Image (cartoon, rainbow, N blue to C red; front, side, top):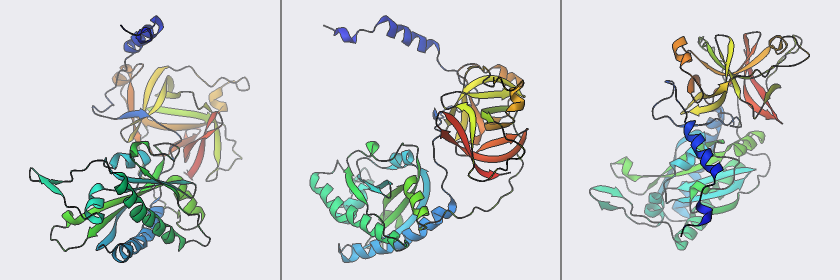
Length: 401
């Protein structure tokens, strides 16, 4: 007999039918195999090249310490080499980890540190197991590690690697650093704790290990281990002057024709006497739970939701826009709110815009990590990042134009 709780109520049935009836329609601006997700305005900044460069210099020294530790303490003929230091989100780091794997999560400097060693690295380098061949392809026949293998990895590999990492940064610090704590083996990296969300930015260092021998095929003897430093750790290291943000070179960008379709986040009023400065935060009249506005050829037409479409900004039309600029102290709200914050733009034809309706997704010309644009009286005056100010959106000025 079926359980009474498994029977859908009429309300649930109506809700499902309504959802089917409102299936989203996609514009030609969406790619066929694109990954669409809601844009999170709390994403951190892209990490500067100077920060990556400083981090790389310290990790180069760290690799020398690792090599010495493996050769002397573990009596393993191994050499560590820093392959790369790249910026990416925590979500991207988790996706690049093989499963099953040897992963450690830990807390450090108010942030999260994720340490991962490929199973091939652990089997070949630390346990001395060889790969088994099947159908002429080399691969490790590997199941989830048992308790003994976890203890070996944590006590003799992870703990020591983390201790040496502390020492590498301690040499650059004028004050004592807090130790790395909460070192925990993670059976399933997908559910790693620590950190605010999957989209937070960080830096991943990939270290390649070479275990003995002088084989002619270099690819066959390189084994990776990865370390992910999240945004909080990098900010703290900059605050302690261990690594530096540095100043970006001023680049005069090529003029880019602004599209006739604009996605606007919100507005504010700037007096002529106010002098904008870097890191100044402007509060907008847009609530964080409100929709963005789409303008075509200068006229407000739709409300929309901000999205990521692969690595580009995009918007999804929610409906016909109802103006949010209604204030009793100004006859014309557009004149009162003389400063607009533009999320992005695109060029569309009249035929294309006529085909847009609720649910249509429109890809914009900007990448998801690019700054928003601050326009005063239709002139670009600054670029910045979106921040949350209580219930309202705000924009933090990153550069003046």
